[in-house]
Length: 55
Image (cartoon, rainbow, N blue to C red; front, side, top):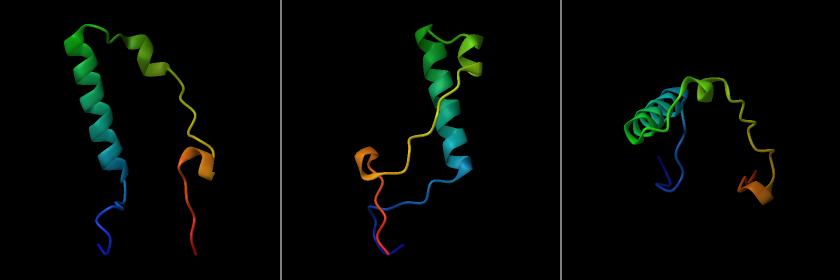
């Protein structure tokens, strides 16, 4: 990879992060099955959300 600051985020990476989050929440005693069905909308594309597009 040319620039170490930029990294491709794969679905495997996202799933691993999700698994880790669920485990940590469970260990703290705040995980419950209602959280499984909580909808989270992805951010819109734009600089205000940290997205940047350079040709």
